Length: 528
Image (cartoon, rainbow, N blue to C red; front, side, top):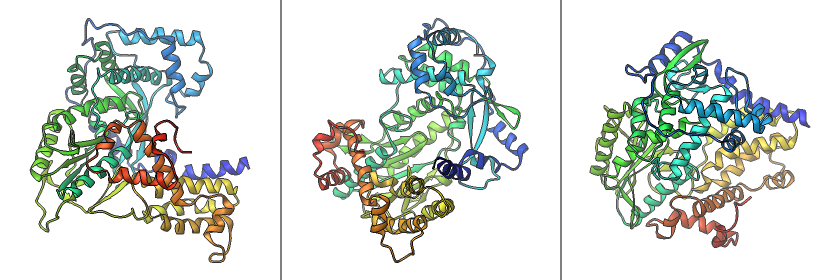
Protein backbone atom coordinates (compact mmCIF):
# COMPACT_ATOMS: atom_id res chain seq x y z
CA UNK A 1 0.00 0.00 0.00
CA UNK A 2 2.70 2.48 1.00
CA UNK A 3 4.74 1.72 -2.11
CA UNK A 4 1.68 2.28 -4.31
CA UNK A 5 0.97 5.62 -2.64
CA UNK A 6 4.52 6.83 -3.26
CA UNK A 7 4.27 5.81 -6.92
CA UNK A 8 1.01 7.72 -7.34
CA UNK A 9 2.30 11.03 -6.02
CA UNK A 10 5.73 10.63 -7.61
CA UNK A 11 3.97 10.26 -10.95
CA UNK A 12 1.93 13.43 -10.40
CA UNK A 13 4.95 15.48 -9.30
CA UNK A 14 6.87 14.37 -12.37
CA UNK A 15 4.15 15.98 -14.50
CA UNK A 16 3.88 19.33 -12.76
CA UNK A 17 6.87 20.04 -10.50
CA UNK A 18 9.92 22.26 -10.91
CA UNK A 19 12.06 19.32 -12.07
CA UNK A 20 9.67 18.75 -14.97
CA UNK A 21 9.80 22.45 -15.92
CA UNK A 22 13.55 22.98 -15.56
CA UNK A 23 14.42 21.40 -18.91
CA UNK A 24 12.11 23.77 -20.79
CA UNK A 25 14.72 26.59 -20.88
CA UNK A 26 16.51 26.24 -24.20
CA UNK A 27 18.98 29.10 -24.80
CA UNK A 28 21.19 29.62 -21.73
CA UNK A 29 22.96 32.74 -23.03
CA UNK A 30 19.69 34.40 -24.00
CA UNK A 31 18.20 33.57 -20.61
CA UNK A 32 21.20 34.98 -18.73
CA UNK A 33 21.11 38.16 -20.81
CA UNK A 34 17.37 38.61 -20.21
CA UNK A 35 17.60 38.35 -16.43
CA UNK A 36 20.76 40.45 -16.24
CA UNK A 37 18.88 43.22 -18.04
CA UNK A 38 15.72 42.68 -16.00
CA UNK A 39 17.52 43.11 -12.67
CA UNK A 40 19.76 45.95 -13.85
CA UNK A 41 19.59 49.40 -12.27
CA UNK A 42 21.79 52.29 -13.37
CA UNK A 43 21.68 53.76 -9.85
CA UNK A 44 21.68 50.77 -7.48
CA UNK A 45 21.92 50.79 -3.71
CA UNK A 46 25.41 51.29 -2.30
CA UNK A 47 26.98 49.84 0.81
CA UNK A 48 27.17 51.95 3.96
CA UNK A 49 25.15 53.19 6.92
CA UNK A 50 22.24 55.26 5.55
CA UNK A 51 20.25 55.40 8.81
CA UNK A 52 22.59 56.64 11.54
CA UNK A 53 21.42 56.95 15.15
CA UNK A 54 18.80 54.23 14.70
CA UNK A 55 17.65 52.42 17.83
CA UNK A 56 19.22 48.92 17.87
CA UNK A 57 17.13 45.78 17.41
CA UNK A 58 17.81 42.92 19.84
CA UNK A 59 16.54 39.44 19.00
CA UNK A 60 15.57 36.99 21.71
CA UNK A 61 15.79 33.25 22.00
CA UNK A 62 11.98 33.10 21.95
CA UNK A 63 11.84 34.90 18.61
CA UNK A 64 14.38 32.52 17.09
CA UNK A 65 12.37 29.57 18.37
CA UNK A 66 9.15 30.97 16.90
CA UNK A 67 10.75 31.55 13.51
CA UNK A 68 12.25 28.06 13.28
CA UNK A 69 8.98 26.44 14.32
CA UNK A 70 6.96 28.41 11.74
CA UNK A 71 9.29 27.87 8.80
CA UNK A 72 8.30 25.24 6.25
CA UNK A 73 10.79 22.59 5.14
CA UNK A 74 11.26 23.64 1.52
CA UNK A 75 14.03 23.08 -1.02
CA UNK A 76 17.48 24.00 0.37
CA UNK A 77 19.90 26.55 -1.03
CA UNK A 78 23.57 26.17 -1.93
CA UNK A 79 24.40 25.02 1.61
CA UNK A 80 22.19 21.94 1.15
CA UNK A 81 20.79 22.35 4.70
CA UNK A 82 17.05 21.92 5.13
CA UNK A 83 14.88 23.65 7.72
CA UNK A 84 14.10 20.20 9.11
CA UNK A 85 17.68 19.99 10.38
CA UNK A 86 17.28 23.27 12.26
CA UNK A 87 14.12 21.96 13.86
CA UNK A 88 16.11 18.88 14.97
CA UNK A 89 18.94 20.87 16.60
CA UNK A 90 16.64 23.59 17.95
CA UNK A 91 18.13 23.76 21.45
CA UNK A 92 18.40 26.72 23.83
CA UNK A 93 22.19 27.25 23.34
CA UNK A 94 21.74 27.08 19.57
CA UNK A 95 18.93 29.67 19.64
CA UNK A 96 20.89 31.95 21.95
CA UNK A 97 23.89 31.94 19.63
CA UNK A 98 21.70 32.65 16.58
CA UNK A 99 20.03 35.53 18.44
CA UNK A 100 23.43 37.01 19.29
CA UNK A 101 24.77 36.72 15.73
CA UNK A 102 21.62 38.06 14.06
CA UNK A 103 21.44 40.98 16.50
CA UNK A 104 25.02 41.87 15.60
CA UNK A 105 24.33 41.61 11.85
CA UNK A 106 21.13 43.70 12.06
CA UNK A 107 22.77 46.57 13.91
CA UNK A 108 25.99 46.59 11.87
CA UNK A 109 26.38 49.54 9.45
CA UNK A 110 27.51 47.55 6.40
CA UNK A 111 25.97 44.92 4.16
CA UNK A 112 25.35 41.44 5.52
CA UNK A 113 27.91 38.75 4.58
CA UNK A 114 27.98 37.91 0.88
CA UNK A 115 26.79 34.32 1.38
CA UNK A 116 23.55 35.64 2.91
CA UNK A 117 22.86 37.71 -0.21
CA UNK A 118 23.41 34.85 -2.65
CA UNK A 119 20.90 32.19 -3.63
CA UNK A 120 20.34 29.49 -6.21
CA UNK A 121 18.02 30.64 -8.98
CA UNK A 122 15.34 28.27 -10.28
CA UNK A 123 13.22 29.30 -13.27
CA UNK A 124 9.61 28.14 -13.09
CA UNK A 125 7.50 28.21 -16.25
CA UNK A 126 4.31 30.25 -15.82
CA UNK A 127 2.31 27.90 -18.06
CA UNK A 128 1.60 30.78 -20.43
CA UNK A 129 3.32 31.81 -23.64
CA UNK A 130 6.24 30.32 -25.53
CA UNK A 131 8.55 28.12 -23.46
CA UNK A 132 11.58 29.51 -25.30
CA UNK A 133 10.83 33.04 -24.07
CA UNK A 134 12.74 33.72 -20.80
CA UNK A 135 10.10 36.28 -19.89
CA UNK A 136 7.56 33.50 -19.41
CA UNK A 137 9.46 32.16 -16.40
CA UNK A 138 9.43 33.15 -12.75
CA UNK A 139 12.76 33.15 -10.88
CA UNK A 140 12.64 31.52 -7.44
CA UNK A 141 15.61 32.15 -5.14
CA UNK A 142 16.76 29.36 -2.82
CA UNK A 143 18.82 31.01 -0.09
CA UNK A 144 21.00 29.32 2.56
CA UNK A 145 18.96 28.19 5.53
CA UNK A 146 20.40 30.69 8.03
CA UNK A 147 19.75 33.52 5.58
CA UNK A 148 16.11 32.36 5.47
CA UNK A 149 15.93 32.45 9.25
CA UNK A 150 17.37 35.97 9.31
CA UNK A 151 14.94 37.26 6.68
CA UNK A 152 12.08 35.54 8.48
CA UNK A 153 13.06 37.46 11.62
CA UNK A 154 12.91 40.72 9.66
CA UNK A 155 9.57 39.69 8.18
CA UNK A 156 8.17 38.96 11.65
CA UNK A 157 9.34 42.39 12.81
CA UNK A 158 7.63 44.00 9.81
CA UNK A 159 4.37 42.11 10.39
CA UNK A 160 4.36 43.34 13.97
CA UNK A 161 4.63 46.91 12.72
CA UNK A 162 1.70 46.29 10.35
CA UNK A 163 -0.45 45.05 13.23
CA UNK A 164 0.55 48.10 15.28
CA UNK A 165 -0.28 50.43 12.33
CA UNK A 166 3.32 51.60 12.14
CA UNK A 167 3.80 50.10 8.66
CA UNK A 168 0.83 50.95 6.47
CA UNK A 169 -0.86 48.28 4.34
CA UNK A 170 -4.32 49.25 3.09
CA UNK A 171 -7.36 47.06 3.70
CA UNK A 172 -7.89 46.89 -0.06
CA UNK A 173 -4.65 44.86 -0.36
CA UNK A 174 -5.56 41.20 0.01
CA UNK A 175 -2.25 39.62 -1.00
CA UNK A 176 0.18 38.19 1.56
CA UNK A 177 -1.94 39.38 4.48
CA UNK A 178 -3.32 37.22 7.28
CA UNK A 179 -7.07 36.57 7.22
CA UNK A 180 -7.40 37.89 3.66
CA UNK A 181 -8.01 35.67 0.65
CA UNK A 182 -8.67 35.82 -3.08
CA UNK A 183 -12.31 35.05 -2.37
CA UNK A 184 -12.61 38.23 -0.28
CA UNK A 185 -11.89 40.35 -3.36
CA UNK A 186 -14.22 38.36 -5.62
CA UNK A 187 -16.97 38.52 -2.97
CA UNK A 188 -16.65 42.32 -2.71
CA UNK A 189 -16.76 42.75 -6.49
CA UNK A 190 -19.95 40.65 -6.61
CA UNK A 191 -21.47 42.66 -3.74
CA UNK A 192 -20.75 45.95 -5.48
CA UNK A 193 -22.19 44.63 -8.74
CA UNK A 194 -25.32 43.44 -6.93
CA UNK A 195 -25.77 46.91 -5.43
CA UNK A 196 -25.30 48.69 -8.77
CA UNK A 197 -27.76 46.37 -10.54
CA UNK A 198 -30.35 46.90 -7.78
CA UNK A 199 -29.93 50.68 -8.12
CA UNK A 200 -29.98 50.51 -11.95
CA UNK A 201 -26.61 52.20 -12.06
CA UNK A 202 -23.56 51.26 -14.19
CA UNK A 203 -20.41 49.61 -12.91
CA UNK A 204 -17.13 49.50 -14.81
CA UNK A 205 -14.15 47.35 -13.91
CA UNK A 206 -10.56 47.49 -15.15
CA UNK A 207 -8.30 44.50 -14.57
CA UNK A 208 -4.70 45.65 -14.84
CA UNK A 209 -1.56 43.62 -15.44
CA UNK A 210 1.87 44.80 -14.26
CA UNK A 211 4.95 43.78 -16.22
CA UNK A 212 7.34 41.70 -14.10
CA UNK A 213 5.95 43.34 -10.97
CA UNK A 214 8.04 41.55 -8.34
CA UNK A 215 11.20 41.71 -10.45
CA UNK A 216 10.92 45.45 -11.14
CA UNK A 217 10.74 46.93 -7.63
CA UNK A 218 13.25 49.77 -7.36
CA UNK A 219 15.19 49.34 -4.12
CA UNK A 220 15.78 53.04 -3.49
CA UNK A 221 12.11 53.88 -4.00
CA UNK A 222 11.10 50.96 -1.78
CA UNK A 223 13.26 52.24 1.06
CA UNK A 224 11.95 55.76 0.49
CA UNK A 225 8.36 54.50 0.91
CA UNK A 226 9.36 52.96 4.24
CA UNK A 227 11.31 55.99 5.40
CA UNK A 228 8.35 58.29 4.74
CA UNK A 229 6.36 56.43 7.38
CA UNK A 230 7.41 57.79 10.79
CA UNK A 231 6.33 54.65 12.67
CA UNK A 232 8.65 52.29 10.78
CA UNK A 233 11.74 51.24 12.74
CA UNK A 234 14.85 52.94 11.29
CA UNK A 235 17.12 50.04 12.22
CA UNK A 236 14.74 47.66 10.42
CA UNK A 237 15.04 49.81 7.28
CA UNK A 238 18.84 49.69 7.60
CA UNK A 239 18.73 45.90 7.88
CA UNK A 240 16.62 45.74 4.71
CA UNK A 241 19.09 47.99 2.93
CA UNK A 242 21.92 45.69 3.92
CA UNK A 243 20.29 42.56 2.51
CA UNK A 244 19.26 44.27 -0.75
CA UNK A 245 22.72 45.65 -1.64
CA UNK A 246 24.04 43.70 -4.64
CA UNK A 247 21.92 40.63 -3.99
CA UNK A 248 22.82 37.83 -6.41
CA UNK A 249 21.12 34.85 -8.03
CA UNK A 250 23.15 31.90 -9.28
CA UNK A 251 21.74 30.90 -12.64
CA UNK A 252 23.46 28.24 -14.75
CA UNK A 253 26.62 28.59 -12.62
CA UNK A 254 26.71 32.35 -13.27
CA UNK A 255 25.96 34.96 -10.58
CA UNK A 256 23.41 37.53 -11.77
CA UNK A 257 23.24 40.75 -9.72
CA UNK A 258 19.70 41.58 -8.58
CA UNK A 259 20.01 45.37 -8.45
CA UNK A 260 16.24 45.70 -8.42
CA UNK A 261 13.27 43.47 -7.64
CA UNK A 262 12.11 41.54 -4.61
CA UNK A 263 13.59 38.04 -4.54
CA UNK A 264 10.74 35.58 -4.98
CA UNK A 265 11.22 32.78 -2.48
CA UNK A 266 12.54 35.11 0.22
CA UNK A 267 10.40 35.28 3.42
CA UNK A 268 10.58 39.09 3.53
CA UNK A 269 9.83 39.80 -0.16
CA UNK A 270 5.99 39.53 -0.08
CA UNK A 271 5.75 42.12 2.70
CA UNK A 272 8.17 44.44 0.92
CA UNK A 273 6.17 44.25 -2.29
CA UNK A 274 2.79 45.10 -0.76
CA UNK A 275 4.41 47.96 1.17
CA UNK A 276 5.89 49.21 -2.12
CA UNK A 277 2.52 49.33 -3.95
CA UNK A 278 0.59 50.76 -0.99
CA UNK A 279 1.05 54.40 -2.15
CA UNK A 280 -0.95 53.53 -5.27
CA UNK A 281 -3.94 52.53 -3.13
CA UNK A 282 -3.67 55.76 -1.16
CA UNK A 283 -3.60 57.85 -4.33
CA UNK A 284 -6.72 56.13 -5.67
CA UNK A 285 -8.66 57.53 -2.69
CA UNK A 286 -8.89 60.80 -4.63
CA UNK A 287 -11.38 59.08 -6.98
CA UNK A 288 -15.14 58.69 -6.47
CA UNK A 289 -15.29 54.87 -6.63
CA UNK A 290 -18.46 52.94 -5.75
CA UNK A 291 -20.21 52.37 -2.45
CA UNK A 292 -20.08 49.01 -0.66
CA UNK A 293 -22.19 50.43 2.18
CA UNK A 294 -23.51 53.91 2.90
CA UNK A 295 -20.23 54.86 4.58
CA UNK A 296 -17.69 52.59 2.85
CA UNK A 297 -16.37 53.30 -0.65
CA UNK A 298 -14.31 50.93 -2.78
CA UNK A 299 -12.17 52.26 -5.60
CA UNK A 300 -9.77 49.44 -6.22
CA UNK A 301 -8.94 45.98 -4.91
CA UNK A 302 -5.41 44.58 -5.02
CA UNK A 303 -4.18 41.07 -4.46
CA UNK A 304 -0.40 41.55 -4.55
CA UNK A 305 0.08 42.71 -8.18
CA UNK A 306 -3.45 41.86 -9.39
CA UNK A 307 -5.36 45.15 -9.63
CA UNK A 308 -9.10 45.60 -10.08
CA UNK A 309 -10.41 49.17 -10.40
CA UNK A 310 -14.13 49.86 -9.89
CA UNK A 311 -15.96 52.99 -11.03
CA UNK A 312 -19.51 54.17 -11.65
CA UNK A 313 -18.57 56.44 -14.55
CA UNK A 314 -16.02 56.25 -17.32
CA UNK A 315 -14.70 59.66 -16.29
CA UNK A 316 -13.86 58.32 -12.85
CA UNK A 317 -12.33 55.19 -14.38
CA UNK A 318 -10.11 57.27 -16.65
CA UNK A 319 -9.01 59.29 -13.60
CA UNK A 320 -8.02 56.04 -11.85
CA UNK A 321 -6.08 54.83 -14.86
CA UNK A 322 -4.22 58.15 -15.05
CA UNK A 323 -3.26 57.82 -11.38
CA UNK A 324 -1.95 54.30 -12.06
CA UNK A 325 0.14 55.55 -14.99
CA UNK A 326 1.59 58.40 -12.94
CA UNK A 327 2.41 56.08 -10.05
CA UNK A 328 4.10 53.59 -12.39
CA UNK A 329 6.21 56.33 -13.98
CA UNK A 330 7.30 57.71 -10.61
CA UNK A 331 8.12 54.30 -9.09
CA UNK A 332 9.78 52.69 -12.11
CA UNK A 333 7.02 50.18 -12.79
CA UNK A 334 5.11 49.51 -16.01
CA UNK A 335 1.71 48.15 -16.97
CA UNK A 336 0.96 45.78 -19.83
CA UNK A 337 -1.91 47.29 -21.82
CA UNK A 338 -2.13 44.16 -23.98
CA UNK A 339 -2.93 41.99 -20.96
CA UNK A 340 -5.14 44.54 -19.16
CA UNK A 341 -8.86 44.48 -19.90
CA UNK A 342 -12.05 46.47 -19.36
CA UNK A 343 -15.47 45.13 -18.47
CA UNK A 344 -18.94 46.52 -17.73
CA UNK A 345 -20.47 44.64 -14.82
CA UNK A 346 -23.77 46.53 -14.44
CA UNK A 347 -25.91 49.09 -16.21
CA UNK A 348 -27.22 49.40 -19.72
CA UNK A 349 -24.59 48.17 -22.16
CA UNK A 350 -24.21 50.26 -25.29
CA UNK A 351 -23.13 48.83 -28.60
CA UNK A 352 -20.43 51.46 -29.04
CA UNK A 353 -17.83 51.08 -26.29
CA UNK A 354 -15.60 54.07 -25.51
CA UNK A 355 -11.92 53.75 -26.33
CA UNK A 356 -9.88 53.55 -23.13
CA UNK A 357 -6.26 54.64 -23.53
CA UNK A 358 -3.81 53.25 -20.99
CA UNK A 359 -0.06 52.63 -20.74
CA UNK A 360 0.64 53.42 -24.37
CA UNK A 361 -2.14 51.20 -25.67
CA UNK A 362 -5.90 50.73 -25.72
CA UNK A 363 -7.68 48.45 -23.24
CA UNK A 364 -9.75 45.65 -24.70
CA UNK A 365 -13.42 45.35 -23.70
CA UNK A 366 -14.36 41.80 -22.68
CA UNK A 367 -17.51 39.99 -21.55
CA UNK A 368 -15.68 37.47 -19.34
CA UNK A 369 -12.61 37.71 -17.15
CA UNK A 370 -11.00 35.19 -14.80
CA UNK A 371 -10.36 37.30 -11.70
CA UNK A 372 -8.13 35.59 -9.14
CA UNK A 373 -9.13 32.21 -10.55
CA UNK A 374 -12.89 32.87 -10.52
CA UNK A 375 -14.71 33.66 -13.81
CA UNK A 376 -16.61 36.95 -13.79
CA UNK A 377 -19.19 37.43 -16.54
CA UNK A 378 -20.91 40.43 -18.01
CA UNK A 379 -24.44 40.14 -16.64
CA UNK A 380 -25.70 37.65 -14.10
CA UNK A 381 -25.49 33.89 -14.42
CA UNK A 382 -27.10 31.32 -12.18
CA UNK A 383 -23.92 29.29 -11.93
CA UNK A 384 -20.40 29.15 -13.29
CA UNK A 385 -20.00 26.66 -16.16
CA UNK A 386 -17.40 23.95 -15.86
CA UNK A 387 -13.90 24.83 -17.11
CA UNK A 388 -13.91 21.79 -19.38
CA UNK A 389 -10.53 22.42 -21.09
CA UNK A 390 -8.78 22.52 -17.70
CA UNK A 391 -10.71 19.48 -16.47
CA UNK A 392 -9.82 17.43 -19.52
CA UNK A 393 -6.18 18.49 -19.22
CA UNK A 394 -6.18 17.41 -15.58
CA UNK A 395 -7.91 14.15 -16.43
CA UNK A 396 -5.41 13.21 -19.13
CA UNK A 397 -2.54 14.06 -16.75
CA UNK A 398 -3.70 11.49 -14.18
CA UNK A 399 -5.58 8.90 -16.23
CA UNK A 400 -2.57 6.56 -16.25
CA UNK A 401 -2.78 6.41 -12.46
CA UNK A 402 -6.58 5.96 -12.49
CA UNK A 403 -6.24 3.03 -14.89
CA UNK A 404 -3.18 1.55 -13.20
CA UNK A 405 -2.72 -0.94 -10.36
CA UNK A 406 -2.67 1.65 -7.59
CA UNK A 407 -4.52 1.77 -4.24
CA UNK A 408 -8.13 2.84 -4.74
CA UNK A 409 -8.03 5.33 -1.85
CA UNK A 410 -5.01 7.09 -3.34
CA UNK A 411 -6.70 7.23 -6.72
CA UNK A 412 -9.72 8.80 -5.06
CA UNK A 413 -7.53 11.36 -3.27
CA UNK A 414 -5.94 12.18 -6.62
CA UNK A 415 -9.34 12.84 -8.21
CA UNK A 416 -10.24 15.18 -5.32
CA UNK A 417 -6.89 17.00 -5.47
CA UNK A 418 -6.98 17.56 -9.23
CA UNK A 419 -10.31 17.41 -11.06
CA UNK A 420 -12.62 18.28 -8.16
CA UNK A 421 -10.31 20.98 -6.80
CA UNK A 422 -10.27 22.76 -10.18
CA UNK A 423 -14.04 22.58 -10.68
CA UNK A 424 -15.01 23.49 -7.11
CA UNK A 425 -12.52 26.33 -6.66
CA UNK A 426 -15.12 29.12 -7.19
CA UNK A 427 -17.75 27.39 -5.01
CA UNK A 428 -16.95 29.60 -2.01
CA UNK A 429 -18.31 32.68 -3.78
CA UNK A 430 -20.39 31.33 -6.68
CA UNK A 431 -22.40 28.22 -7.47
CA UNK A 432 -20.88 25.96 -10.10
CA UNK A 433 -22.43 23.41 -12.45
CA UNK A 434 -22.58 20.60 -9.91
CA UNK A 435 -24.62 18.26 -12.12
CA UNK A 436 -22.14 18.69 -14.96
CA UNK A 437 -19.25 17.99 -12.58
CA UNK A 438 -20.88 14.78 -11.35
CA UNK A 439 -21.25 13.62 -14.95
CA UNK A 440 -17.61 14.42 -15.65
CA UNK A 441 -16.45 12.58 -12.53
CA UNK A 442 -18.35 9.50 -13.64
CA UNK A 443 -15.65 8.85 -16.26
CA UNK A 444 -12.91 8.94 -13.61
CA UNK A 445 -14.84 6.57 -11.35
CA UNK A 446 -15.30 4.15 -14.23
CA UNK A 447 -11.55 4.20 -14.89
CA UNK A 448 -10.79 3.55 -11.22
CA UNK A 449 -13.24 0.69 -10.71
CA UNK A 450 -13.06 -0.75 -14.26
CA UNK A 451 -16.84 -1.08 -14.25
CA UNK A 452 -18.58 -1.23 -17.65
CA UNK A 453 -19.65 2.26 -18.67
CA UNK A 454 -23.42 2.70 -18.68
CA UNK A 455 -24.10 -0.40 -16.58
CA UNK A 456 -23.27 1.09 -13.20
CA UNK A 457 -24.86 4.28 -11.94
CA UNK A 458 -22.77 7.20 -10.73
CA UNK A 459 -24.74 7.24 -7.47
CA UNK A 460 -23.83 3.60 -6.78
CA UNK A 461 -20.15 4.21 -7.49
CA UNK A 462 -20.11 7.25 -5.23
CA UNK A 463 -21.74 5.34 -2.41
CA UNK A 464 -19.32 2.44 -2.75
CA UNK A 465 -16.26 4.70 -2.87
CA UNK A 466 -17.44 7.11 -0.19
CA UNK A 467 -17.28 10.12 -2.52
CA UNK A 468 -19.68 12.87 -1.46
CA UNK A 469 -21.87 14.64 -4.05
CA UNK A 470 -20.20 17.61 -5.71
CA UNK A 471 -22.90 19.99 -4.55
CA UNK A 472 -22.41 19.02 -0.93
CA UNK A 473 -18.64 19.45 -1.20
CA UNK A 474 -19.12 22.84 -2.84
CA UNK A 475 -21.45 23.86 -0.02
CA UNK A 476 -18.79 22.92 2.53
CA UNK A 477 -16.45 25.40 0.85
CA UNK A 478 -19.17 28.04 0.87
CA UNK A 479 -19.89 27.50 4.58
CA UNK A 480 -16.20 27.71 5.43
CA UNK A 481 -16.08 31.02 3.58
CA UNK A 482 -19.15 32.19 5.50
CA UNK A 483 -17.28 31.39 8.71
CA UNK A 484 -14.29 33.34 7.41
CA UNK A 485 -16.14 36.53 6.46
CA UNK A 486 -18.08 36.57 9.74
CA UNK A 487 -15.08 35.86 11.93
CA UNK A 488 -11.94 37.15 10.22
CA UNK A 489 -12.58 39.30 7.13
CA UNK A 490 -11.76 43.00 7.50
CA UNK A 491 -15.21 43.88 6.15
CA UNK A 492 -17.14 41.62 8.56
CA UNK A 493 -18.64 44.63 10.38
CA UNK A 494 -20.12 45.88 7.09
CA UNK A 495 -22.01 42.66 6.26
CA UNK A 496 -25.38 43.77 7.74
CA UNK A 497 -25.18 47.04 5.80
CA UNK A 498 -24.19 45.83 2.31
CA UNK A 499 -25.91 47.75 -0.47
CA UNK A 500 -25.66 44.59 -2.55
CA UNK A 501 -26.37 41.68 -0.16
CA UNK A 502 -26.95 39.05 -2.86
CA UNK A 503 -23.64 37.13 -2.44
CA UNK A 504 -24.01 37.20 1.35
CA UNK A 505 -27.63 36.05 1.13
CA UNK A 506 -26.47 33.10 -0.98
CA UNK A 507 -24.16 31.95 1.81
CA UNK A 508 -26.88 32.37 4.41
CA UNK A 509 -29.27 30.42 2.20
CA UNK A 510 -26.81 27.50 2.00
CA UNK A 511 -26.54 27.56 5.79
CA UNK A 512 -30.35 27.45 6.04
CA UNK A 513 -30.48 24.34 3.81
CA UNK A 514 -28.53 22.46 6.47
CA UNK A 515 -30.38 24.12 9.39
CA UNK A 516 -27.21 25.91 10.49
CA UNK A 517 -27.76 28.83 12.83
CA UNK A 518 -25.58 31.57 11.32
CA UNK A 519 -25.18 33.16 14.74
CA UNK A 520 -23.41 30.00 15.89
CA UNK A 521 -20.85 30.45 13.10
CA UNK A 522 -19.40 33.29 15.15
CA UNK A 523 -18.73 30.89 18.03
CA UNK A 524 -17.59 27.68 16.35
CA UNK A 525 -14.80 26.57 14.05
CA UNK A 526 -14.83 25.78 10.36
CA UNK A 527 -17.04 23.14 8.78
CA UNK A 528 -15.10 19.91 8.40
